[in-house]
Image (cartoon, rainbow, N blue to C red; front, side):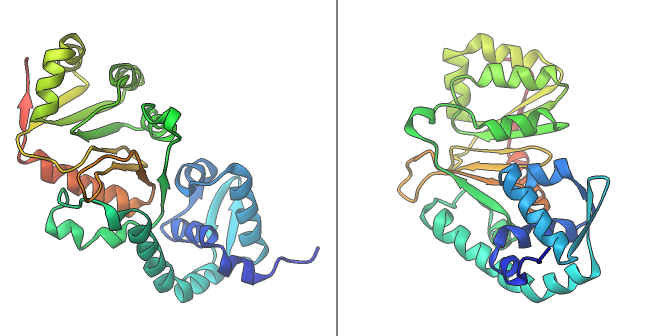
Length: 261
């Protein structure tokens, strides 16, 4: 069988992203499905392409980068990181209010390498994103920082609790007051649950929400004009998870723990 041209790998940003993931250590197929942000058919096609050129190996559905893959990645990595950050800024961050990010984390924003921007159809704008919920159910912990919530939030949180997930909720004071007034029983169920920790952030957040689980960072940010246009940013890279944990800790240190309503 004639091999596909190596030029296809060079031209395929997603293939290079797979090499970036595998450069951090072996990954099984499930890890790649969660992290790659592509369809199963596209993922299998890219895996086949990388294996053809001896850039990765497969053993019982566990994938490793080869020495040849490391050499190839070393030659393209600086350009990949640069292009990814520029694309991210142009497509999403360039028109976002970034006042919610502390200065030291702004500097490391370029570490968020692998991402996709989600633009839901207008009929779906009040639906919770499926990928975030599915990966949250598989996580040990979920962190939600929010100035706004989707209408069906209680059902979603209770599903996570049923799956043994620990939830940290950090709400701005306006959202907390609104929930206490309009959804008191729902809020009480969360406060009374041992798997849930609820915090109030006393300052303005300058965002709609951000959600972090074991494998995804999900940002719902305001535009530069202060509006929420329902465009969302989803990232699966380990560096993004680390960045998201640091961001949550920054908000947590200024927040108050709620033990009763």
